[in-house]
Image (cartoon, rainbow, N blue to C red; front, side, top):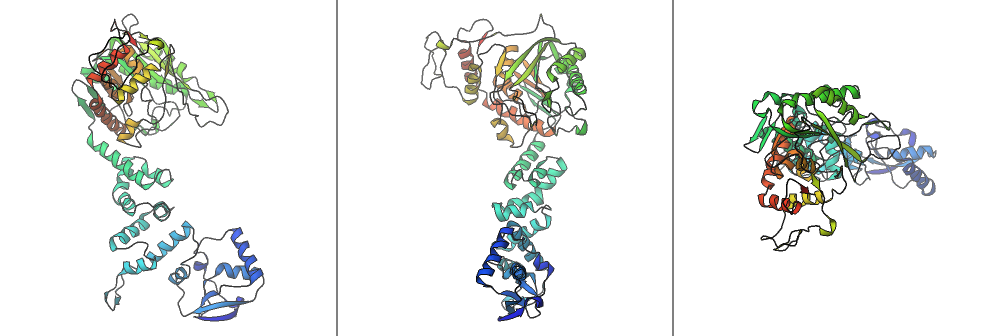
Length: 538
């Protein structure tokens, strides 16, 4: 390397080299200008014998701006290659974009077919690449995977950026591209777009796809646990075609897709329920579906529809009232009441208009025959005589009588008891929304609108007895089915989406594992200490 002084106008730019690294910020350019102006050129420009600039483009630009004609250069005996450009920038402060550019360039500048041999034996392309990458990665297998990722990455280099700056696993990125991405795209699981947009990382993407693919292949369209569960992957309107379910249902409790709030990816495509052009069309379609399930209802059956309002720039459509009107018009069911459930943790609906956040949703309540409909009156305990759950070996009931066995409710039953204990306002159900841990155990990306985990408890206790059939026609991840099983009722459900149906089947399996007869009976004693008539103390 020779150090010389040359005229700045004699130096030649290589466009590819000049644009190889990320452009400096205005602040960095100002700092370089100030440094050269005050202290002179400290670092030589790197050129080859033909005066082509290999490194120092920012310095050359600063020198030109300052009107400096004579510059110090180091002349290297080297051809003008990107390898030399990278070599002279080993210790440069680089952006993620710079690192991506370097890595991709190093792989592409070392062709796969070389035929060159070293003195010690055959030429190893990956050894050369590893050396040029400063041993960032080693071994043929690892480097082959990195190259596969480079060749098959998204246009925005999501995976390579994740590896370089976020510590993403090379093996996970390779597994996603080679094995899992095709499953996701063919089955429309929706994970790849989330990964591309940066909403999830590679570890989550791999987990989500594996979960969904496992569920899809494990459960059949008809899932039956004799005497406990019947779950179908079909349109709820077809349930009445199955003879055994006609005139068998004691309670319908369900939450249909809400109007224009979200895409449920349930297989209906553009015509899915909830995506109608008008609120009237939406309500009529939901009512027509409810009409198709009426043949499954007993004379004593209750039908409860959980529905929330939809807003357009802060103005409500009046969905609950409109849906109630269409259900009465289309089904022949008799309107009984409208229950309110209050959410202590409501969330805004991405509106631009300022207004109080609605913390209420509604349960529209219908019956087949108001004179015959089953109803268990819910009563409320006196707080001064509240029954406490202790961790001791013995406990007493509300009258002070010592029980023969200790009270130690398992987790799901403790939650049910705590939920019921909070119901202290007539005609209103209090129930928090949010993540459902039981669904998350099965699949982290299971459903876009999971029902509040404990919402079905009060309606089921109010309208059914043990071994009664509870039907959820829009089952989703089957929150209703889980509570039905824990309360020792029989679950019937339909779900149009194959994926959500599979998640729901696993929920039902888990619920039957969690069901504990002693806990259930203990819960009923706590709620009904006098064990009189059909009332339940909540």
